[in-house]
Length: 271
Image 1: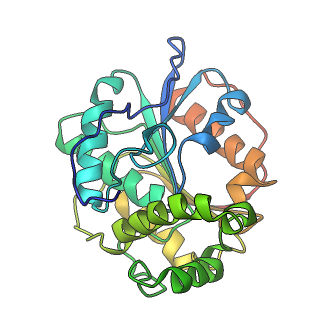
Image 2 (image 1 turned 135 degrees about the vertical axis):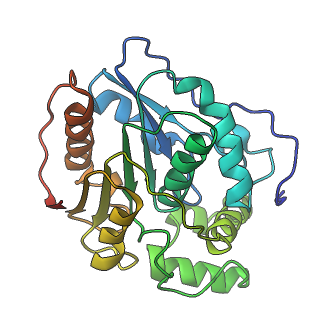
C-alpha cells in the first residue's frame, strides 16, 4: 500500500548496528527500490572506527507492511527526528541516487533542527539536486512503460523479479513510490553547508554528467571533490566497491583523525 504521508509507521528507522567504540557514525541512505541490505557488507569492509548505520525506509524489508513515502519533505523530517539522538558523536551521511538527494536534504534539515552538521557528506550516482533532470518523469507510466524506462535508465530489474509475478507485484509499487518522491521533489535554495562533500559516480552512468556531479560543490563552502569510478549506475555494488570504501574511509580519517588508511584507486577532481 502506498500513501503520500500516511501513519502506521512503527518500525525502526535504523538497522541494528551498535558500536560504542566507533569514532564516527555513517548514516547510509538507499537508492530507489532498495533497503539496507547493500550496506551491511560495509560493516566488514570498513574500519571498526566507522559505525555503519543504514537507514530503514518504510515499505521494504522489515518495514514492508508500512506505507511507502511519496514525499521527500515528510520522509526527511521523519528521518531527522529518528536519528537526532545519534548525532551525539561525529557523523557523516552517504546516499546513492535517490539516497543522494535525501542525504543533502537530511544534512540541511538536521542543521535546521539545531543539530551539528555532519563531519562529511558523501553523495553518489546523481547530478546535484538543483540541476534539472536529464530525463522526463516516468512514475505515472503504465507498468509496461515503467519497466521499459527503468531498463533504459538503470539497466532494469533483476531477472528473478521480472520472471516472478509475485515478486514483481511487491517490488513495482515500491519503485513507483520512490520515483514519485524523486520526480516531485522541489529544490529549495538554502545556505550551503560548511562540511566537506565528496560526489561519486560510475564512468558509464548515463544519468550523471560531469557538470551535474561537480555542481554538488555549490552546496558547501567547505572542500569538495568529484570522484569517478569504473562502472555504471551501480558501480558501488561491483568491482569498484573496494575503491569507493577506501575513499570514504580516508576522507573520514582526514576529517576526524584516528581512522586507519584504506587503499583507494579512482579519478578525483578536488578543490
